[in-house]
Amino acid sequence: NPNGEGNGGQMIYSRTAVSPAQTPELGAPCPPLALRVSCNNIPCPVNCKMGDWSEWSTCTKKCDGGMKRRSRNIETYPASAGESCPPDSEEETCNAMSCDRDCELNDWSPWRACTRACDGGMRWRTRTVKRGARGGGKCAKKFAKARYHTEKCNSDPCPRNATCIAKMDLILMIDSSGSMGESGFKAQRKAVLGLIDSAHLNNETGMQIGLIAYSKAVHVLSSLSANKADLVKAVGTMKFDAWTTNTGGALRTAAVMLQGSRKGVASVCQLWTDGRPSRPSSRLDAIGSAEDLRRTCRVMVVSLRPAMPESFITPWVSHPHSANLITLKHPTEIADKVQQLWQATCPALQWTATLPR
Image (cartoon, rainbow, N blue to C red):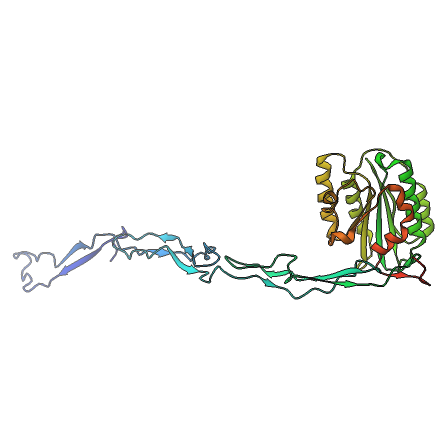
């Protein structure tokens, strides 16, 4: 029986009277027939109680065998000779596979559009990495034969006069910086009008053209449009700023304009320039802006002076560099290069007859 303190109990010793007093008046009474004594006056044992296991930790190695660990808390500690606690943590091996694994490649992509409509262009296809190499495994580089395949295309000679009939969104970035000179700026304006005049402009089946002029400031002359009259009017608003060359700003503005392009339609962003960005920091700005633009647009550069080295420009243009960089000797030449621009830019040219070259 409990003694009220939560520990211990009682024992009862009992006996019976063998010869009870016959004459209570004269005989002595019997002593007590029961005796209570305490017993087991020690604390009761308390067994250990454990909480639930935690989730396994991340493996310490991705391959070649690592360790992972899990743990649990002690909710009740043992006492008074109760059962002791089992281990509160445990480990086991994981990721025992070898670290050496070659990369796995995706299937070949579809062929890209030919870089030229005539006079011999190039098309290519690629294989991207599906699963990267591990440890000492190997993986072909981006332009290795295992991942990059080219072939010639559209080898027919180009005519002198043709119309671009491609369904395409074209953004022209026109240099109005001081190094261009008044004559160079006018030649660009004439070339833009020539491109507009020889393009099949149509919102559904043909081309849209967007116009940007840039110097220190960047001006949007026209968002992407297939309205010839509006585009010609926009060219008329072009002004020769005769200031510094904000190449990065022009490329970023083209990226914003491209948000209004048609879904699923090829886009070309063509930068016309005759000079380097004004400061070294501006060059890095142009490289970064061009890299961002290349994700959604084929970036081409028309260099209007050969003194500007190709190594300076190639970080801006899309791959392949040779198909996306056009070099002229002087800005004034561009006025007479409309057909050459279409030949390098437009994937579909239409003409009625082949004229002498």
